[in-house]
Amino acid sequence: MKTYAETDTLDVIIVGSGAGGAPLAARLAQAGKSVLVLEAGPKFTPAQYTSDEIEAREIYWLNERLSGGRNPQPFGGNNSGTGVGGSMLHYGAFLPRPDARDFQLHTETGRSVDWPFRYEELLPYIEEVESFIGVSGPAQYPWDPSRQYAYSPPPANPAALKMRDACDALGLRHADGPTALITRPFNQPYFGERQGCVSCGACHQGCRNGAKSGTDNTWLPLAVTYGAEIRPGCFVHTIETDQAGRVTGVVYKQNGQDIRQRCEKLVLSAGAVETARLLLHNGLANSSGQVGENYMTHISTQIWGEIDQEVRPNRGYPSLTITEDMMRPKDADFAGGYLIQSLGMMPITWASNIARGSTRRGADLVRTLAGYNRSIGMGIHGDCMPSPENRVVLSDEKDHFGIPKPLITHSYGPNELAMHAHASRLLTRMWDAIGAKDLRILDRAAHMMGTARMGKDSGSAVVTPYGQSFDIDNLWISDHSTFPSATAANPALTIMALALRTADAMLTH
Ligand SMILES: Cc1cc2nc3c(=O)[nH]c(=O)nc-3n(C[C@H](O)[C@H](O)[C@H](O)COP(=O)(O)OP(=O)(O)OC[C@H]3O[C@@H](n4cnc5c(N)ncnc54)[C@H](O)[C@@H]3O)c2cc1C
Ligand code: SF4
Image (cartoon, rainbow, N blue to C red; front, side, top):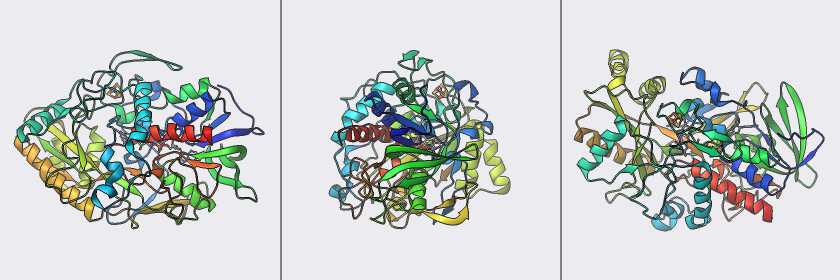
């Protein structure tokens, strides 16, 4: 890997090496730009990953975040990762495409906001991402017969098979969901041999086989081949500007030392909480007053039930069956919609979710946990609207770098509550239909989005529809913080597609 000197002024510095930072790094490096990616976390090798849930926490972002609101969010493994590869090191690799209607929800319903461009504009980038990283899916996708996936799906685990039965019982369509993994060996250009998925079930602990399509085995090797440097263990805390207010560089902490690196352009890809925190801490790019505002999640209501058969939910690719039939349900009392997917889960994550998301306690909780090996799950990802109630601000507490810890306020509004209630009723009917017992609805939210939204109007958005700051023309944002609304789809595909689009805009700017 090429390395740059501390005295070099880079064409582009990117803060964060995840879904937002990595594709952009690759595109810019391929175009001949000098690119440095500063990543707070360490570099892992696949052999370091372990299915042991405790040890695997090293790939989570564990710096403390304070949580408030009526639906306070657990952070850590639930929400963000760290390391060269970002949160995709431990994401679940479920990769549905966003629904075109979700980009125009305000036009459709008068609620939420429209994205500042139509889905069709992002589609070529979505297809490019899928083709480059490797995505598996069914031969015929019921909700979009035009699309094709390069790899066949991995085998269905018991929860996925039971969800198929439940869908059939209620007359819902179902399919194997799009998954960011390969099911046969492939020699990934610029990376090397990736093995086909072996259905070990440890996606959330890091994939030892290279089967899961992350940024560590796709975009980052491409970026490095074209001269980008990925510098791990570097926590950026200061953004420096000149008298005209333009960015001149950053200061980061590495091994306890402050190091300054200069750049012509800066891209923040640190994720919805850390990107907002950096901007707020440095008092930048906030003439709109929108930095940190409109924090969003996905409504991720789950249902778990027990069946007589031993199914061992830790085994097999965790989420396979999908139905998109609830993207606009006929009986909806809410705007937008939700996806349903089957769920397997590792035992500690599962037990924590049950303890946190249900009211079971004492002997009742112990009995529930003892039923792990007979448990099957399903969960939703539902659209979430921007709300002035939900935000990231700087708290009064400092972290070990001396930077204020972020305080995240998160409360469901009426639309989210109505969607949660609708999903709870439907999921209960589904598991009832196949005879699952002792049903538990878990009220939970996942993923994080918003906080530096894109838009056409500098008064209500932080960045342009291409991710460029309205206030500082050499500052760009490429991560899930730019989402104007959550959409129902798991976010990694959209983030990567947006990253390529932002890179193209930077190259033509
Ligand atoms: C448990 C879990 C399961 C998920 N499953 C799915 C799924 O199945 N499908 C899907 O589409 N999405 C899934 N997601 C969500 C998805 O992984 C994220 O939305 C996405 O990866 C976020 O990309 P990003 O680039 O915005 O941020 P990140 O990938 O989080 O990247 C931010 C990076 O910036 C670094 N960083 C932060 N602050 C600084 C700083 N100050 N200086 C230097 N570096 C910094 C961090 O260490 C991190 O590596 C899941 C997420 C989690 C947590
Ligand atoms: S289930 Fe497949 S993709 Fe997931 S960690 Fe195991 S081999 Fe990798």
